[in-house]
Image (tube, rainbow over all chains, first blue to last red; front, side):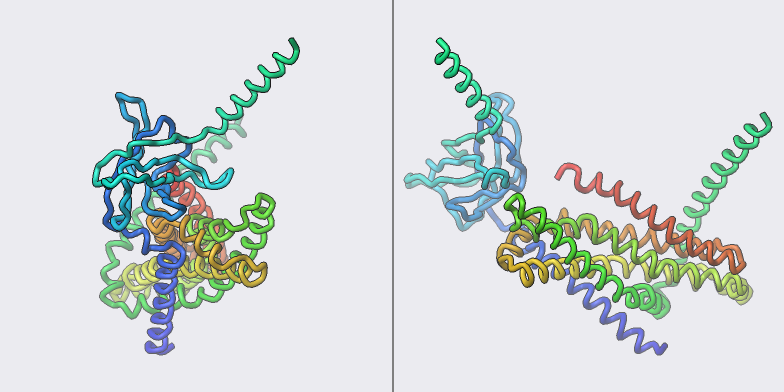
Length: 157
Length: 263
């Protein structure tokens, strides 16, 4: 086979291989949002974060505005500290409420921000004042069972 | 007593043989690496091997990728819709392809399509004493025959794996959106939200690169290790496909442990 023909075919092969890589990165993996857009960090303290994971979305009114960057335990308060990376263009007031929510019954766990009315805005390193912990399904079920048991016990008497 | 002794002797012999073989493969690997600059200084040789290993594998890779994607979409839709989660079909297909099926199945096909051809070619060269003739002419067969084939395969494999995953995702799109009538936005949007470029796409490429090394090293080694008979070539070709496939699956298991354990 002539060298030019081989070169042509190898060129085509490499070209469509690279195009498919770009396709995987952009269309499938969405590299645009992955790029570390400059953002600022805020901290939120929770009694219980449930199944929250690093890189979980932070949503305000259902719109993704940032990601959970780090989760740790405060050694003195024994509370979970979630460090949130919020995109630069979004600002939230100081009395914003952060809550750990689940989309649907089995869906992903995310942090929802409910904006308050304070004039002052949260900045880099600030702490969210009010938080609402995750609703742990097992605890709810346990409570329900307990209530059932106690109500049936009172009926018997 | 004698039989037990013989059995023990055979076991010891087999173990020693395997270990020697393994050491020989390692030595061969480093010899090929040492002769690799030759493959890049005379790049037309490597181009030719990329053509034979990569371009000629395109059809089987694209067609099987397309069908695997379509089947995965049909089966996934069937199961996911019972949980009311059929919107996650794109996520299922994309993650399954990128993390596991894409690199592994593409490498298995590559071992069958290109690896066997490399072994048969080198084995026949050895049987017909072409390799010896090269040495007589002071041409090192490792530099002239082994290194270009090795690098041709290593360069082709990640591109083939990417094409395989892409074809599968396209096949899933055809079934999910065009045939079943799923929402186009939900299909791509959920996929983009779930697929991470670093953990999924990059690891997919790392895996396929490692598989490329495994397949082509096995193929080139078995070619050089062939018994110079017709039977020897046939058994070497079989060994390439079997050993490369097993090594791919084992390496995939180990890499998956490291890549996706904490995610």
